[in-house]
Image 1: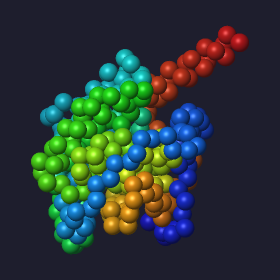
Image 2: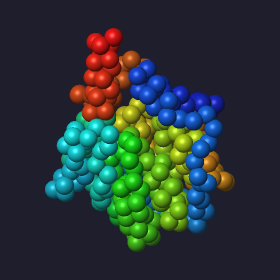
Image 3: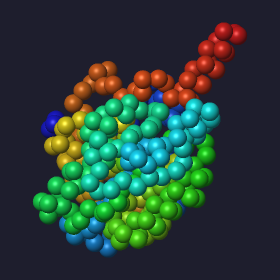
Length: 175
Length: 112
């Protein structure tokens, strides 16, 4: 691990390459255009909170239906908008990663690169985190020009499942 | 994903989004954003690099403690261990949208 750079300003395009930087950069406005940002105050601090993870890597348990990549091959404008549950003890051997925009081999060798369940469990053991949720979540991040199903169906269902398990904090990581 | 963070947050669960392309913030408006300069597909660290994975996890969770208002953006202090030229994150075959754009561009160039 390189020494931390406390003054770092992240270069969002460092790994993207020119083509993707230009294509994605063109979508991003210079000033905020979003609706007011929702805010849920922290009810429990991290050392006493139950934490759930969410990845956009298209992760599914082997034995569950995988994310449907044919859907996107037929319509390149949008990927599978569904969601999956992953139990806290899932490891790379149990999980399939279906995502057409990244090299998924790394995740299938070490799930912690995108869904660090082992690291979270260790943090609970060290007393840095209160508890690990029983269930964690994945979506497939590429929704192109139509995130409606993701936002109207999958995301509310994930939020409800988290509430049902009394999750205090959710850590999300796009890939 | 940032849009999903908004839905979960609106349901009452605080979120942090660990994000490489943090400049999407202007478009999306994520409640709490931890910017990370890692290659696509490995936001927490490389295969087998438990130290970095744990440190990124700890830093991202720390954002919950430090953020005071919606739209908080924090740049995490991590530097990937490979140069971009040596970092292989692309899928074996181009994604359908990239293939489509490249085909359209090639067709345009043929026709011009």
